Amino acid sequence: MEVQGKVKMIGETQTFGSNGFRKRELVVTTEEQYPQHILVEFVQDKTDLLNSYQVGQNVKVSINLRGRDWVNPQGETKYFNSIQGWRIEAVQDSASGAVPQGPPADAFEPASSLKEDDHDDLPF
Image 1 (spheres, helix red, strand yellow):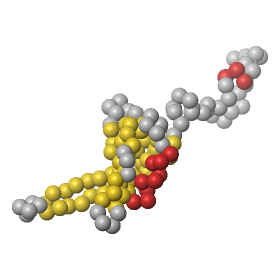
Image 2 (tube, rainbow, N blue to C red; image 1 turned 60 degrees about the vertical axis):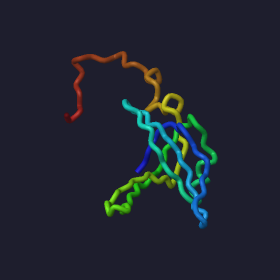
Image 3 (cartoon, rainbow, N blue to C red; image 1 turned 120 degrees about the horizontal axis):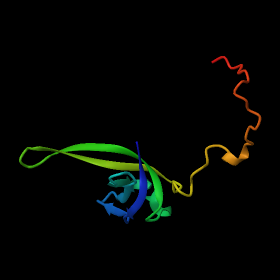
Image 4 (spheres, rainbow, N blue to C red; image 1 turned 90 degrees about the vertical axis):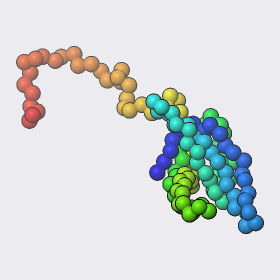
């Protein structure tokens, strides 16, 4: 799956526990009618992927959804979800990165000798 939008926040790398588990958070704001602020976690060696990105940059993030359960001391099972990033790439702004779809209209010469009576040999 992918999330695309503008980088709102890039957190610092956090280290947890004696084994050195590393986590870094990224917030991407989607560009749709109702923009969403999506928190994506990068873990372990993937935290370094965020080093070359800045707030305000348009990105596409490849993600995996993760889910887990936890039984609290009262015996109730709770469920948690997280969004984990594994790749990130810069995306051109839609205004400046737009690629024209074909040649401009003035590249074609207008037809000057068209007559309605001319026979059309097209089969349809």
